[in-house]
Image: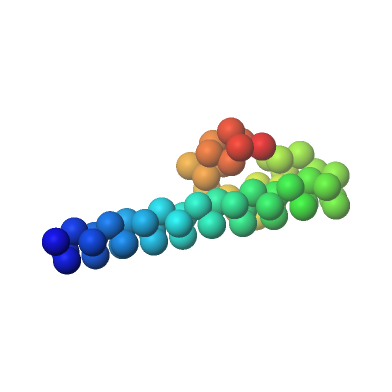
Length: 61
């Protein structure tokens, strides 16, 4: 039982951290789009966002 709880906590923490990372990236992209009048693609290139993250972030914009 203890191992199951530990696994759940670890999985939850990893999911939470990934979600926080994505939200941070998204907020930074929106800020660049607003302040610099860049497109989402321009902002992501400037931030050197990976291709995998680009696809996910474009869905959220």
